[in-house]
Picture 1 (spheres, helix red, strand yellow):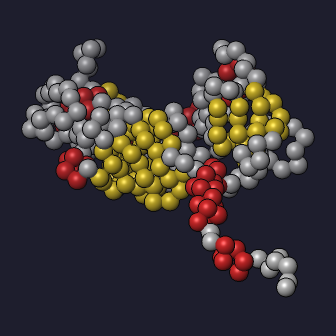
Picture 2 (picture 1 turned 120 degrees about the vertical axis):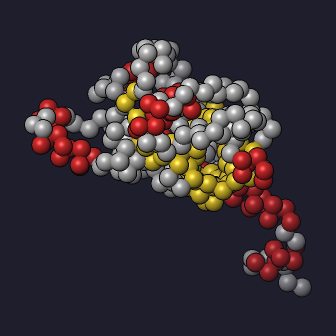
Length: 306
């Protein structure tokens, strides 16, 4: 470490596969570069593990940590629950710690309105809210970049809430749907950037089989979703979820898990079609292949009688 310290301790709720004493006993090993590195050059890679307190677990935010940094990091809170940490604070009369509120948002924004904060740095780019179902214009907005997929759209004069399902950055349009569970909000396929693997690049099972079962999440504290990874030659992966998930968006990070281990993560670059678009395609295919006899059986006979 550049400061001359042997290790660093942080307050993250996470664990590693090495004991604290091992941090001070190890020798520095330079990590080789390259996608498919020689696996014998770095032995006993340190794993990033989920915290004992699953609700407070912060491995999602540590999924891009380097192996060198992880080797020299200690997480004293990793094996403790938040309630137990508060008990320790109370026993040591650290009342200012007990009274401190949980930080759930972006600390550098604070209580400011998020839209107002962004518009201090970005020029407004007015556009339209458009229904994904019939392409009617429902209202206007100050910029497509103010919205993420899955969030409620601020459209005045409507009796029901609408939600963002697509964005056209070129035209500035934001497409919306009328229900929180609308099929346009759900997808089961995505592609990431080159994945940062914490212990290996990439895991041996994925290299061998070109596919690997694991779990992923793209938001902190969301339930883990079973998936299958397909490895591409450039180190990117296709992620196929076992069920369609709500609110996937490009720019988010897909973080991968195998049991308690956080494997690493990659930025979401592409999304597969939504459930709504797949359903539309199936309906069109059904109409195109429908025979005249089938149509006559399904509806009333409108032919003139002889």
